Amino acid sequence: MLNLLQEAGPTLQVAGFLDHSFVNGEGFRSVVFLSGCNHHCPGCHNLSMQSFNYGDTLSSKDVFEKIKKNAPLINGVTFSGGDPFEQSERLVPLLENIKSLGLTIWFYTGYTYDQLLENESFSQLLPYIDVLVDGRFEEAYKTDTKKYIGSSNQRILKLLDGSIQEELCF
Image (cartoon, rainbow, N blue to C red; front, top):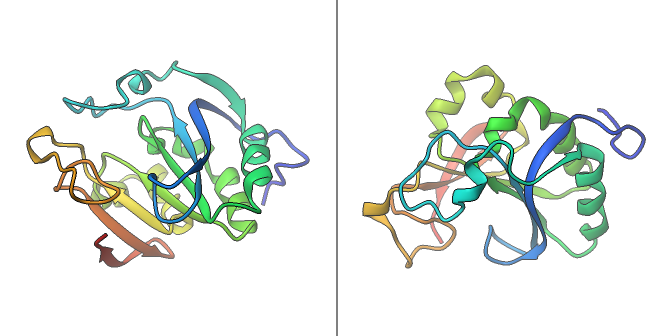
């Protein structure tokens, strides 16, 4: 494990950061919004974050230090965007360090679980993820009645060691 308190680690294009949130996953969470998305879903509520250049270039260490500062108060960290899998090759050290704090990790993605498995770069992240919200936002299936998803075609999947354990309903 790369110790992000001693080394800077890879850089990430960060669109935004929330210290505390109740709406981006179960429990009290910090949220990292990563830039870049190739899905271009009509009706996307984070349209500006689709750009791979939006936001600030930060070291993994800087992001980890923000999360570590919040660790006594939060249950976990949520990654959203954009689509965090678009920066997958740079995320492993950060995810390893977050896990060392005993925090849960949620990921929001427009990719389906099966699509993630087919991509070696994407699938390497799955063992670190506790809950995966998968599937593109589909405006025709927009919902305000289901917690943690934007459209009813999306799934909330509990993962263990990268494998689906169950589909969660909130």
